Amino acid sequence: MNPILTCVTTLIIVAGGADALAQTPRPANTYFSVAVTENSHNHYGENLMYLAFSDTPQVATDNSRIVHSVRTVAQPIQLDGKLDEWPAQRFTRIRGRVMNNYPLGLYYDAAPTEIRIASAFDDEYIYFALSYEDANRDASIRRNQWQYHEGVWRPMPHAKPTPGTAASASVNRDAPLAGNEDEDRLLMMFPIQDKQKNFVDGGLGCAGYCHTNLRLTPTTDDDLTGAGVAAMHTVLPGDLADLWHWTATRSRPMNTLKDGHLNFGTVSDNGREADSGAYPFENNALLEPLRPRYVSRSDYQAGRYQQPGFETRQLVTGDLLEITPDMQFAEGVSLPFYIPVAPSGGIADVQVVALFDETSFSWQLEIRRKRVTGDPHDRQFVAGEDLPAPTDRPVAAGDPGKGEKLFHEKACAACHGEQGEGLRHTEHTHSEGQSAEEGWHAPRNQRVSAPAIRKTVSPLRPRRLRYLAHSLKQHNGQPPEALMPFVNLTPQEIEDIASWLQLQYTPDRQ
Image 1 (cartoon, rainbow, N blue to C red):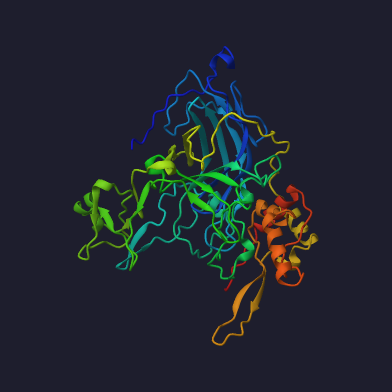
Image 2 (image 1 turned 90 degrees about the horizontal axis):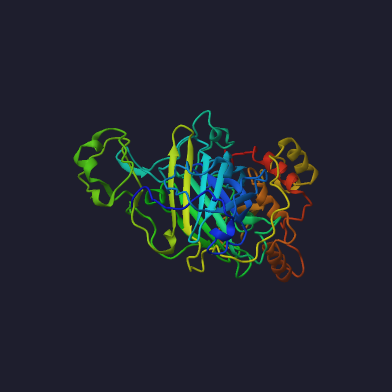
C-alpha cells in the first residue's frame, strides 16, 4: 500500500453559507472517547467527549470535552500524517487523565501528556486529526520483537523507560514486568446502541464498558492480572459500541487500524470482537518451541545477521526466507514478530496515516472513514437527533494530598489497606490432594483510574445489581461478603483519590 493516501477534501468553509454548500444533512451530534498509550496496555485520555458537527466554521472552545467537526469544501488536504492543512485553532486540547492501569505489574503505568484532536466531514467521509507527545519520546514499534540470545530466540524483554521522560516518572518503573515489549496505540470508541446511558451528558463513556472485572482477580501474584481483569464488554443486552484501535507496530505499516466492536458480556466474558475481514498483519512465529519463522532474505544474503545486535526493522512479504537449523545468528540480532499484509473487509475500513515526529517526539495521525459503511458493527455518521451537549467540564488534575485524606475519611482503607494494597484471604478446600487457593477479600486498588472508581462505587452499576441478586438467592438472603458499598463522592473527589492511589505501589511477594 502507498504510504501516503491522497484524499481531496477541505478544511475551510467558503463564504456563502451552509445552504449553498451542504449536499447531505450533517451527522447527528454524539459522544465518543479517546485514549492513547505509551508502549503499554495502560492508557490515558478522556472517557467522555462530544463531537459537534457543523456546516459553518468553528474553532476550538475552552471546553475540552467538545470537538467541532466542520463540513469541508474548497481546499484539498492530503491524508499524509503531516497535519499542516489543519488550522491550529481547530484543535481541541486534552490534558489526558489515567483511564486504565492494570491492577498489578504487567505493564508500565500510563504517563499522561497532551492530546490534540480535530475533526471534519464531507458528504462521504468523516476525518480526524490527532497528535500527542510520546511519554517515552520514542516510537515504540517493536511489539513482541524477537531477539537471539545465547543461541535461543526469545521475545525481547520490556524496555525500561527513558530517564528524564514523562514515562520515567511511573511508580512501577523499576518493577520486573511480566509483559513483553508492547507498542504505542490510539483507541477511539463511538456508541451504536447505549441503553445503559454511558455516552450521554454526565455518563461514564468508555469507562462503563472497559476493564469491568477487577474484583474477580483470583491471584495476588504481582506478575499477573488474573482471569477476567482485562475483559471489555457492554453490560446490558443489546448495547453495542464501535471501537477503533490503531497500533504502531501492527496496523501502522498498512495505513489502517483494527476496526472492532464491543458486545454484551457478563462477569469475565470479553465482548470485544473484530469486525469481519482480514487483519493487516500475520505473525512471524512457529510453535513448539515458540520461535520466528522468517528472516529478511536480503538481510541474510548480505550477511547482516552476523553482525551483533543487527535489527530487521520490518519484514516484507516478497523478501521472506524461512529459517533453517543450519542458519547462524550473532548475539542480539532481532526480528519483527509481525509481517504487514493487505487487510480486507470491515476490519480495515478506517484509513490512517501516522508519522512520528522526531523533533517534537509526537505521533501525528490523520484518519478517514466513510460516514456510512452499512456494517451494523460500525457507528453510522448520519443525520438524526442530536444528543444534548455536555453541561460539565472534565475534572481538574487530582490533588494527591486531598485524595489521601478522602481515602481514609471514606473508610476505603478499612477494606483496601492503608495504601490500597488490598486485603487477602485464603480459602481452604477440603478435597483430598488439593492445596489452598489465595485470592482477594478486597482487591488491590493501587494505581487505579478515576473512571474505574466512579463506576465501581455507583449504586446503579448493572453488574453490581446482578451479583447482589445472585448472592441473595444462593445464600438465603445474605449479601455477599465483599460487595463494594456505595460511596458518595463527587467526580473531583474521585479524581483526587485516584491521583493519590496512582502514586502507591507495593510489590507483592518480595
